[in-house]
Length: 273
Image (cartoon, rainbow, N blue to C red):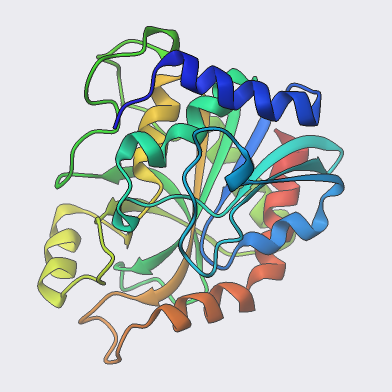
C-alpha cells in the first residue's frame, strides 16, 4: 500500500486543525515507554482512529494516541505507540506518521524502543543511544513511486542518527547520572524473538542490540531531512546470551521499572535541543 502526497496532507491538516500550532520536536515512544506523556502540560490527545489514513495499533502496551503538549517548556508531539511490520502493516503504513510530522514542521525526532541486548557488556535496564543501524532482510520503506515533496529517491545514510543530538543526549545522561551506552541497533521483522544463531550472526555483523521497530521510521525521517536521535531501553538479553526464556511480559516489566530514568533523560534532552 502506498500513499499519495494528498493522503499525508489530509492527515497533517487534521492534526494541525486540532493542535493549532507547528511542532519542532517529536517523540515516538516504544513498548512500555508511553508514560512520558504523563509529564506533558496542556495535553491534547488524538486517538489514531480519529486521524485520517492512520492504521490502528494492535500492541497491548501501546496506547494508540498522538499526544501534543509541553515538555521542558518545549512544544512536543508524541506518538504513544507505533505501528509495526509484524502487525501486518506495510512499511508505507508504519512510517506514515513520520511524513505527517514533516508536514507539521518537525525538525528533530527522538525514536525510542525496547530492544534485546547483544553486546555482553550491556545489562537489562541499560539505555543505549543509537549510533547506526543494520537492516538487511526486508524491503525499504521508501520503495515504490517517490513522493518528491519528502526528498530524493536516492539519499545518503552516512549519518542517520545525528552526532549533535547524540552529544546532547550523552551530556544529559552524565548530568542525570543515567548510564548511557552507545551502539548499533539491528532490525528484525518479528514478531517472534530471534534465535540464538540469529543473535550470534548479528553480533558478528557488529550489532549491539536488536529490535522490531525504529529503523523504517529512521530511514523515512532521514529522507525528509529530519534530525534523528535513537534511544533503546535494553529490556532483555538476546537468545543464547542469558539462559532464560524471553517474553513480552518481561520487556514491558523492565521498561516500566526504569521509566523514571527514561522520563528524566528525555525531558533533559528536549530542554537542550
